[in-house]
Length: 363
Image (cartoon, rainbow, N blue to C red; front, side, top):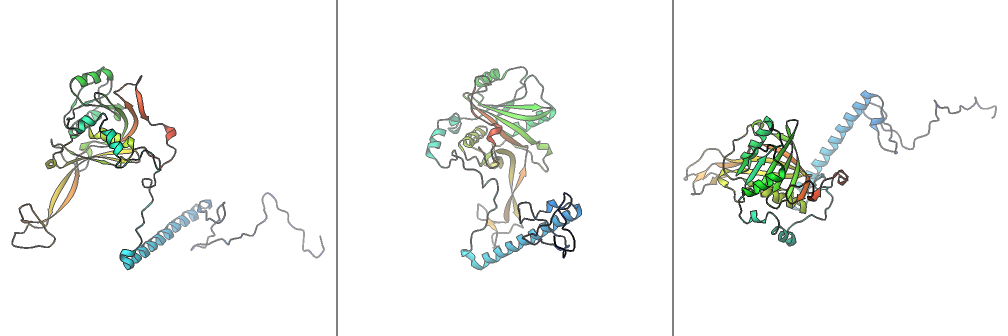
C-alpha cells in the first residue's frame, strides 16, 4: 500500500457491507421515499418497507395511480369505439374463473349420441309424461329440530305433490321399498348436524340413481326480505351451466323433481344455477307492472305498448320477488341404483385429490 493513500481501506464486516452500485436508479414517489427493488430484480416491493406508515401510504398511492391509469385506458377505448363505430375492435371481456375453466372431455352440446342415451336413462319415463311424487324425510331415530322442520316445510311449498313422513327407526332400504309400493318417484332425505341441515340425499325410484349433496348457506323463506307467499301453481324450471355429462345427469335429476308442464299463470320460477360446481337454489315470482297512466285508444303515445285487444296501455316492466328458501348444494357422490352403502356401485365420487386447480370443474 502506497504512502499517497489517505488511510487503510476498510474491510467489509458482518454489520457493514460493501455498497454495490445499482444498475437501475431507485424510483421515488411524491413523498420523496425511495422504493426498494424486488428480490427478483427490477420490481417494486412495497411489502419490503419496514416502516408501517410509509408502507401504508405507498400502497394507497399505488392503488390510486393504478385506478387513474385504468380509468384513462377505459376512456380511450370508449373514444375509439365512438370514432370507429362498427369497425371498432370488440369489447374486452374480463378473465374470470368461469370463462377460463379447464377444458373437459365430457363437455357436451347438441350431441345426438348424448340425446339418444338420455332417452333410455332412469328419467326417461318422467320426460314421457309421468308425474312426480316426492317423499321427504329426515334423520334416523332423531326428531328434526325446529329449523330443520321449517326448512322441510319450505321444500314442500316448492315441490308440488310432496309429503313429509316421520322416519323414526326405519332403515333407508326399508323406506325405499315402502315408497316404491306407494308409487313415490323420489325420496328426499334432509340430514342435520347440531340442529342445522348439512346434507341432502336424493333417491330416484325405483331404479335410482342416488345423489348426495352437501347443504350450506340456508336462508328460510320467512327470513328473506320482502318475500312473497307461494301458491299452488306448478312452477317453471330454469337450469344454468350444467354443461358436462355429469352435469346433464344432475340437471335431469332436478328436472324429475318438478312437473314437466308448468302453470304460467302462477308466474313461479325455480332456478338451479351451477357456478364452479356449487348449485345455487332460488325461488322467485315475476311481476308485471305498468309504468305511467293508462290512456284511451284515441290518443297515441310513443313508447307505450298495446294490449291483447288493441287498447293502449301503460309501458310495462318486469321485476322479481323472491319467495324462498335459498340454499347452496355441492355434489359429493352419485351412486347407481337406490341407496346402498355396502354393495352400491358409485358412478362419481368427489375426492380431495381431484381438486388440482381452481379452474377445474365437473358439472
